[in-house]
Image 1 (tube, rainbow, N blue to C red):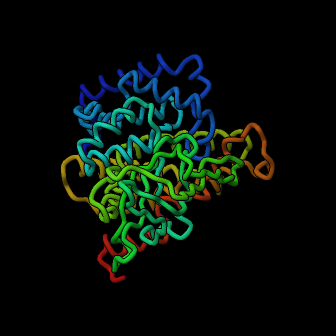
Image 2: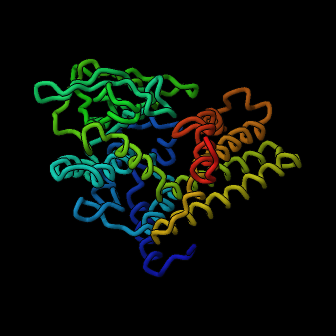
Length: 388
C-alpha cells in the first residue's frame, strides 16, 4: 500500500485547491457544507448551477476516459480531488448518480449510440439521473423486483413502483431495473436495465418525508410509461449483471472524500463536547478516542483497497467490509453527538442543528446500500467461504 503522493500529485492538489477557493465565492459561498447526506434537498437550484460550474472548469467525471469527456485522471488524482472537495466544504453533488453510477455503466455496457447520446450531458452537468432499483418488496433482495416492462410497437412499456429514489424530482432520466421475462426460472434472470425519461405522463413522483423533516427521496410510479426500444443497457434479460457492475463502481475513490467529511463531523462533535462540558466525562472521552482510532483504520483500509485495485491485485475480503464498517462507525458517531449534547439533545437547539440532523440521518446508514445483516451474510459466504 502506497500512502505517499508524488510531486505531480501534490501539484494537482494545489490546482484543485486553488480552483475551489476561486469559485466557491459569491452565491456559491452560502451553499458550503450543504446538500450532503441527510441534507440533499437543500439549495437544489444553486447546486445544479454549481454542477455546471464544475463542468466549466473540467472537474466533472475526472476518472472517465478522455474519449468520453473525462480527464482520464489517475486513482490518486481522484482521491486528491475528493479530499480537497470535502476539505473546502463544497456542496453535495446533484450529478453524483449520473457521474458515478450511470456513466460508468454505460461506458462498460452501453452501445456506441448510447455513449454518444447520454454521456455528454452528464459531463456538462446538464442532465441529471436517478436510480430505479429499490422497490417496496425489493431492497436488499433486489432480484425480487416486480416492475414490469413489455416491448410493444417498438417501445418499452413500464408498469410498477420504485422507492427511495434519490433526487427523483430533479432528474430528467432514470435507469431502472425491470422484469422483462416473467417466466424466467430464477428471479435474477429476465431482468433488463432500461433508460427512462422522467418527464412524461406515465411517471408520477411522490416525495417521501423523512424523520429529518426533509424529502430527499421519493416513490416513483410507472403507469404505462414508455421508452425507446434502444434504451437498453446491456443485453435484454441480462440486466442483473449490469446492475451488479453498477453497484461495484459505487464504492470507489469518492469514499475517501466521504471519510474526510466524516472527519469534519467528528471535529464538530469534539468542539461541542468542549462547549457543553461533556469533554470532562471520562466515558465520553473514551468514546471519542475509540471513534478517532476507528476513523483512522477506515481510511487506511480504504487506501489499501484502492491501492490494490489500482495495481490490479485482488483484495476482496478487505473490500467486502467497507460499507459495513463505515455505516456502523457513522451510526455510533451520531449517538455520540446526542450524548455530548446531553439534555440539549431533546430539543432542536439552533446551535447544534447539524448534529441533530446527523443523528437522525445515521439511523438509516445501516439499512441503505445493503443492510448490515445482508452485508454480514455476504462477508461470511463470499469472503470467508462459509456455507449459506
